[in-house]
Image 1 (tube, rainbow, N blue to C red):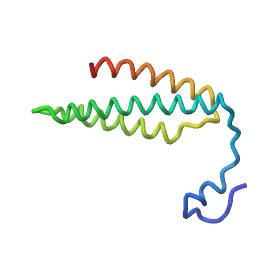
Image 2: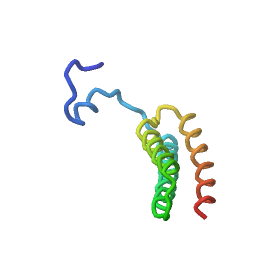
Image 3: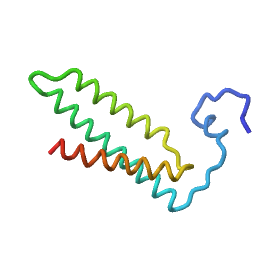
Image 4: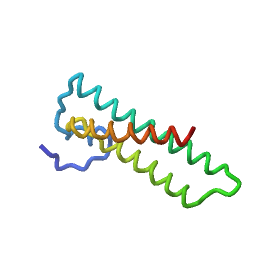
Length: 106
């Protein structure tokens, strides 16, 4: 049921959300996916800092890294425990990317 009132506080927004069923497997999958995204985001931030401290920073690289950081933040916001297959796919994708980024960071 959707309320006709305008949401003005976080509590108003949450009040109209349908209840969610969580179990241990879902909670663990969701947290693992969020953590994978967070680790990738941290690597992008480290690369951005590294690029920014170079004598001649590559502005294109900086913009690319900022976009990737924004993408990670967006993925964290929209990730939903309602779709277990999506959680597994996100976790796998970000885990692979994390391995590549760790190699790049040395």
